[in-house]
Image 1 (cartoon, helix red, strand yellow):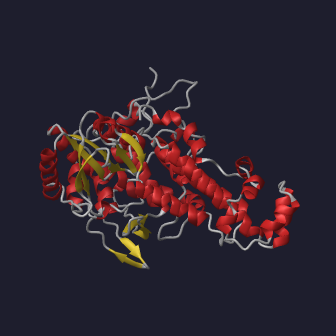
Image 2: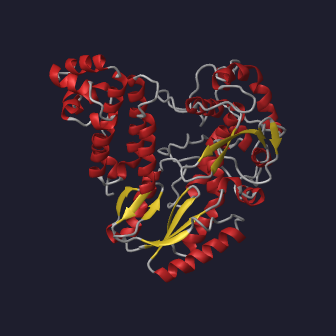
Image 3: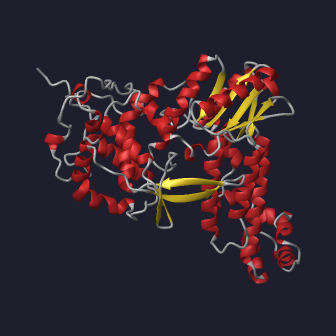
Amino acid sequence: MKNKEELPQNSNRGSLPRRSKLDPNATEEVLRPKPTGSARRDQPALNGPEPDDPAGETLTTGEEELGLMEQIVSNYNLDRAWRRVKRNRGAPGPDGITISEFEPWAQIHLEEVRNQLLEGTYRPQPVRRKVLKKEGGGERLLGIPNVLDRLIQQAALQILTPWFDPDFSESSHGFRPGRSAHGAAKQVQQTIRQGNLHVVNIDLSKFFDRVNHDVLMNRVSRKVHDKRVLKLIGRFLRAGVMTEGVVQPTEQGAPQGGPLSPMLSNILLDDLDKELERRGLKFVRYADDFVIFVKSSRSAQRVFASVQRYLSETLKLIVNQEKSHVTTVSKSQSCEFLGFAFVGGQRATIKVSPKKLKAFKRRIRELTGRSRGISMKQRLTELRRYVRGWIGYFALAKQVEDFINLDMWIRRRIRMCYWKQWRYPRTKVRKLTELGVTLDMAIKHAVSRKSYWRMCNTPAMRFAMPNKWLEQQGLRSLAELWFQRAPLRGIA
């Protein structure tokens, strides 16, 4: 009788190369991990994701018989995890080992680490503290794990995701396979269009830094019964943070920066989702950002108070009173969520929030600052990358007129950079004549004492550097990119 674990000959699903990338001694006979012991009776079976679920591969019968930790440390799962970690790149942790340096190290030490994980004796290293400035002030604290710990977290994530994710709420969109901020924004728009114009916006104060470990582990243990895995997750949470060479203990929080933290946040906040669903409330959540929708101002105030009480008493989380508020979507008022602004009352048009537009213009000024000592080629490359990424996210916004105006402003700044770079009058005359400007007009511009900003908007400058010419140099149009991404908008 054929082993159920075998795959059709024309399928490479779940296959590994003849030698594992991380273990050079692994050959064909260990392509699939052999059972090292049957799973405990009280440990739920892992069914894995559906065939079309991008979270991972469907587990075969042979793999279902393995313990949870055995599945995590299998050659197949570790190879998948390593490819993801390598693709994400990232900075080194406290040990200073980079992605390129890790692979030779792993070929020597990986088997020892695997045995420690199976025995339940592996201890993660502290994470490296990284502080990021927020746009509106304040700081975001990141914790960068060593490459080895990132690999182990990613391997655990790949096994745990198909176990936890199917039970998460349909209104939860953050850090989940096949979901995105665009889906969350569209759901907000649909909910408002159903007449839910009163919005409760609750901001959790430093959520990732204040997660209660006992509350979180209690929720993880509802599905994970393998004590080795529970112990490993607990050790990751309590590994500590290295700041300027000094290790500080982490008695609370799930440091951002590791692959496992986003899923742990979803596990904790899933209780909130279930509570809101039990009450029949409409909501949308993306990680620790969420909004609740009701149909009256009085209901909004009541929900605001009760949800705040649930968060503090049950989940032991702190609500930021200054940023939390109740608002009404109307022609004069908007609801902001994930950088989008929802305006127009029940028609609910999606736009870029004023705060994000202001941040965009500030970043463009930095990239096109005329005093930056870089070549125009490098400047345009940096600008092109930023513009493509920004419009890729905000393509849902229906404000093409604003994007056209921003294009005009950006082109003027680029002309200003060229004018400043040419510097000397003789250089300006030569460049302008090469671009088709008459000698007389070129000389008048070259000797002018008017400001750079004013000169770059003259008819001669626009003639010398028309939109088509700037596009040939590498400048991309926001409006053009917006039109190209029309399918993203769908019903938005």
